[in-house]
Length: 387
Image 1 (cartoon, rainbow, N blue to C red):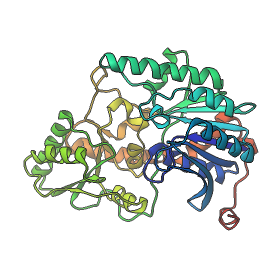
Image 2: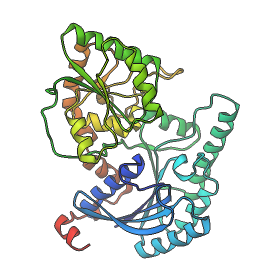
Image 3: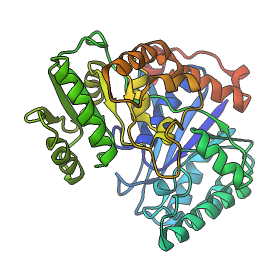
Image 4: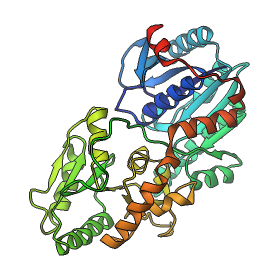
């Protein structure tokens, strides 16, 4: 059985959905499927290239089409790739901003409709339309919602998924009915240290650097607890020191006792990133609490038994509305800035880390697509040598 994924970009380590697609594809190949990918609007390349990407000992065929390419060229090369790969299923990994820089993918539905003739379709909605806050954003949200409706109408997908309950509800309000497929971690590597035994106490910010009062206040109270317990600590901002990161660092530095405690990691290769995640004590997410389940960075920590603090509650959502399909996962989310609550969340995180297993999620997708019975395990060494 053959399946082809269509996403925006496939630059390793630079695009969350691309990394997600690559790792999911690899595990489907391990289960015996034939998988390839089209990066239909790749912002990291200028031309069109047919390449192979390797992960976990598996070779994945990828067509990367630069975002600056005209629609005619995109369609021409995508059709050639489809003819060559001849998939039974096409899986669209949908993010509006992945297919258009302003989040308005005009005519995408029509293009994908032409590419998917006589093939079964699946859509994974990683993101939907924005939540409107002013007149301009209301127009954008209206258009994005209609683009999604048009995509569903024209592709007529046999299966649809999304990752968090609030997205499922919003889709249902638009008469689009999707099942839940959780997000797994894109980060793998060798185990370096025993979880919970890193010294000093290590707090990590990963992914979005956003200054929010609730996050700074949460960190202030948690640091007070660490001081009271006589625990040394450090704060790692994973990423490069760009303006958004600098602002966050400046805000944290206003907390007493944080002088020389904050460091930027810079851009990290996967193995180095995994080392920091695995040896940390607590991650702090700036993602709104009701959307935690769509965050690959949150999944990266939870899958290694590291609890995640989620101080930010977006206005209009309840404090206790934690965005996971599986309510067991909420036990690993720290919402109170004290060490007693942290210890409870730490124990929960260690117990439920397998809930976000990529293998488990890949098998769920196969079952939903009805293709599990066709799969035979692949020989990894043969996969490497044959390519």
